[in-house]
Image 1 (cartoon, rainbow, N blue to C red):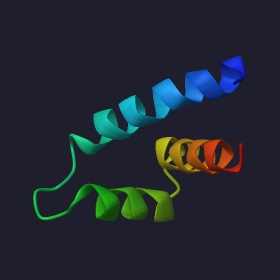
Image 2: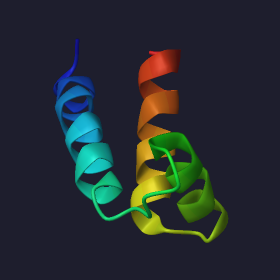
Image 3: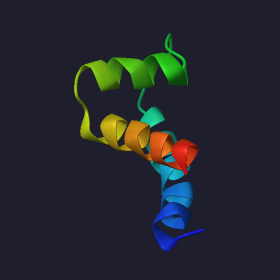
Amino acid sequence: MSVAAMLLALLLPVVSLWKSIGRAEEMDEFEHFVMELLQGSLWAVFVLAGYVFLFAW
């Protein structure tokens, strides 16, 4: 496993959790992620690209 993949494997859950803490109470984590992704949030794009990279790896 490359260093980039290991770093992504460690960073992605941390970033996802950190950014999901401030979500609205009526939304679950996935709904919050999709809403942020549709708004073009940089962290959501990073998380999506990272998970796609790890899945394809």
